[in-house]
Amino acid sequence: MPTHLQAHLHAHSLREPTAFWSAAANAITWYRKPDQIFQKTAEKCTPERGVNWQWFAGSELNTCYNALDRHIESGHGSRPALIYDSAVTGTKKTYTYGDLLDEVEVFAAVLEGAGVGKGTVVLIYMPMVPQAVIGMLACARLGAVHSVVFGGFAAGELAKRITDCQPEVILTASCGIEPARIVAYQPLLQEALTLTSYKPSATILLQRPEYRAELAGMLDWDEEVCKARREGRRAGWKVLKGDDPLYVIYTSGSTGVPKGVVRDNAGHAVALTWSMQNVFGVSPGDVFFAASDIGWVVGHSYIVYGPLLHGCTTILYEGKPVGTPDAGAFWRIVNEWKVNVLFTAPTAVRAIKREDPTGALLKRHDISSLRSLFLAGERSDPETVRHFEKVLGVPIRDNYWQTETGWPLAAACCLPGKPTPTRAGSAGPAIPGYDVRVLDASTKQEVTRNTLGAVVVKLPLPPGCFSSLWKNPAGFWKYLDKFDGYFDLTDAGFIDDDGYISIMSRTDDVINVAGHRLSTGSMEEVLAAHPDVAECAVVGVKDDMKGQVPVGFVVQIANSHSLHESLPKVLQTRIRTSLGPIASLKEIYIVPKLPKTRSGKILRRSLRDIVEGRKVVVPATIEDEGVLDVVQRLVRPRL
Ligand code: COA
Ligand code: AMP
Image (cartoon, rainbow, N blue to C red; front, side, top):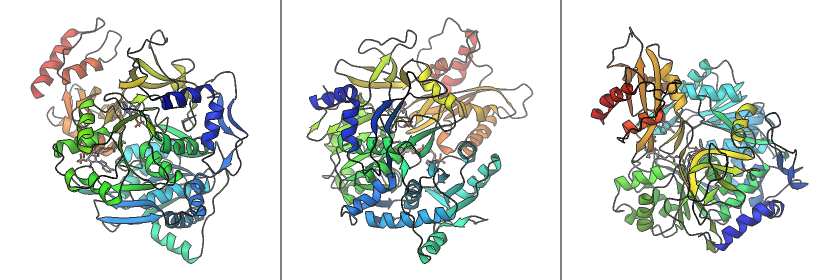
């Protein structure tokens, strides 16, 4: 059962949103306080106008000021703000709030020198190094809109993002470091720039000692910073409107075109600060370790902004849960930096469990500072939850959210003094601010408790959630169009008798691979672009460690130039170079035909059943049942 406190706060937040969010807004330092906490701006949401509400109208603030300056002004300049711990380079560096502000002020001046100001788009394609965080905060300081692209994306995906957000300036580094190889970014960036007709006016590159890139017209990060220091240039924070955009983050949808989720300044600052204390149970000065990547929303919200807005110490970890050097890496960090709360993806802890099933590596470290382990990105399976509850001796708190919401909408909250009990297999009860419902996809009516349906949030969305897609009102409308008055999360799940929400699967063609949200549509696009491919389908199938992995089915054209045997390898290479290695297909099957309905829809569910070894339910609308038999005969012997 949710404790009275979470249930009470949840009810209060929906009944009296103004009072609830007004109290939360007190944690932020405003340049100008909101005239109104919440206001309805029209009778209904419409495709042209978008949403019909506004949070914190009339407010002015600066997110970077709230994340850095004000903590120093309150006497916490010497508190560690960011601890960089790189297992792949052996580097460790602590930045106090004072140090971080110093770096951000100077780098913001460098950006100003490159023509960056309020509203300028800056794309950040960087590994997990402090300069990436400094770049993000420097943009926030100036009111520039940053768009961070995950370093594991290859040229094709990077090009799509450059084309869509048209950055004036790009920040990059000479390389990322994967355990087994150096990933040179400059060739990827160069290739991306040849794939898009858009050209940025400046690129600033951080040279890393592990690999030096040809500058070829790019500005050298360190030289620019030294020059600004020599010239005594520093940038102050700019006054921004509450609804000015802070950043755009691209995420996968059903099609190959990524969607640019826009986050504003005011709602984001209020919601994240509230969540730090009330969802994650951390106080200013606590140490928060989100083992994710700044390229994902978890990294934006809980490596960078959430902990810093709340005055915590955040850990920036460059490494993997296993293999850098072993499955004790997270516990070493918890011990060394006295981490209070760890946040990661279920796939990461499953990888740890696989390598260290008895917790022998864990026992080498003192993890007594740890209070909770939060898991998000996919459903935390009960077996994994129970294992870690046992070996860590702390609650494992699943929490459910997505790039669009920016912060969790369901979790057993760690409310001060009144934590909500967890329930293995469920994400937890709805978080204050979110009116979560489950609807029947066909009748659009609410289903009864414990019945699976489409998970939605009754409008309005709380502060911090997106309220538009970057220059894409039609794309945004799709979220609101399916169920009138609700935001469609494109997930299927149910709510139990106690209000605990369980999320079981996506309802679109998005899959979650090792905590990465990927579109099967974009993989199909890459396969279909090969001249020897007549038709294809990609489906996500279950994987014990990664949650899901993509598997492809390809129909070769008649008189194909490729050998039947070599085509899968060629296609795999295309996927890796276009989308990135994180999107590698587990298998590519060359099949004579794809199973389809009479109306021509590919039976992806049947393909999934075949690969997962389940009994295939043959839909009544199937065009040719024989195709399923042929595919089964090809796939099953190879499993
Ligand atoms: N830059 C470049 N390449 C990257 C990359 C990055 N930032 N991240 C991953 N890759 C590459 C890997 O090197 C690997 O390449 P390979 O096929 O040539 O070996 C490929 O992408 C697949 O990587 P990954 O999906 O990470 O699988 P893995 O088997 O190497 O590791 C896990 C498995 C579970 C350890 C790893 O996926 C992981 O740490 N997942 C957690 C992800 C996470 O935190 N997500 C955020 C949500 S909260
Ligand atoms: P992303 O936008 O990359 O954060 O991915 C969001 C998607 O991941 C959601 O729509 C869900 O499908 C899935 N997801 C995230 N957290 C959870 C969770 N705790 N339980 C189940 N699914 C989750």
